[in-house]
Image (cartoon, rainbow, N blue to C red):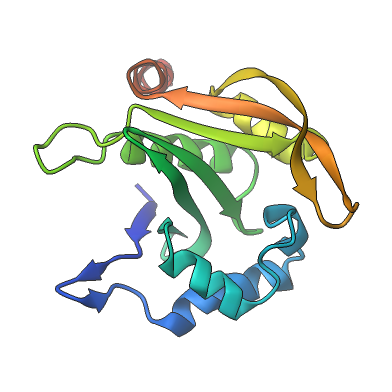
Length: 186
């Protein structure tokens, strides 16, 4: 396996990543012109706001591909055994490889254990701007289920208006079985 998912967490009170390393994720997004796409609501506009957000009620995971930074994902909106998912892939992680890495990350995150050793999550959900064609195609290729389109579901700061979003989800048991079947088929 050429990729790793590294949790931003505190081990014995010591963060697994420095503040500057987390802010570098934002810098990379900015360099690649991804900030307005990833943070379409306009709530995160700079590296300090990004750091503050990730230190808040979010669980951040850094994605490495062949030892290089390739993106990150985070979970938030926790409600019992459900969370919202968000992904950002950099230019070195695109196409079919982004689908492969995404599936692996989803399976890994859906099987994170709770204190009793049971999977922590049963369901991931996410809203995607229907005009974000690459993200819509990625979700479909990932094998995520689309529940439907919600009108005016998300705020798009660049447009200054609410826009329609597709509601995507992955249910742990069903999704993990699907991914394992895809892997077996080659």
